[in-house]
Length: 111
Image 1 (tube, helix red, strand yellow):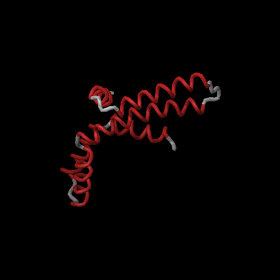
Image 2 (tube, one colour):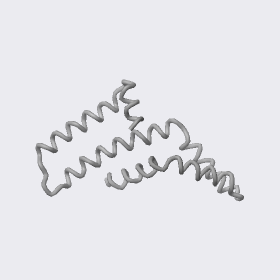
Image 3 (cartoon, helix red, strand yellow):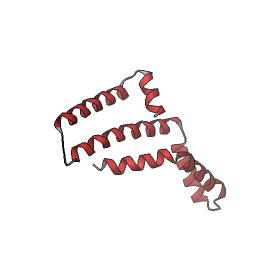
Image 4 (cartoon, helix red, strand yellow):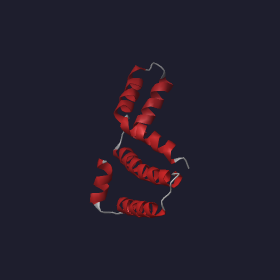
């Protein structure tokens, strides 16, 4: 899988989320064609909520970690000891995200 491409796409949506919302709201109010405003309304309904933003933030954090590990595997100077340490750290991080403890959910959403 192309982690880098997916990670970059998620980062773009995350970093420009407020502009995306503004653009869709403008499309909704300014578009004279009903199908255009209906599409904008549908997209807004799907993305302008807590669940979408939460998953977007969590996915961004996880993909950044996976991307970092992926780059280590592709390095010309692969160091097994460093790789092992980084994989263990990744496992710990992913375990924290999977934990039901609210601290980790809050941490994931604040990154």
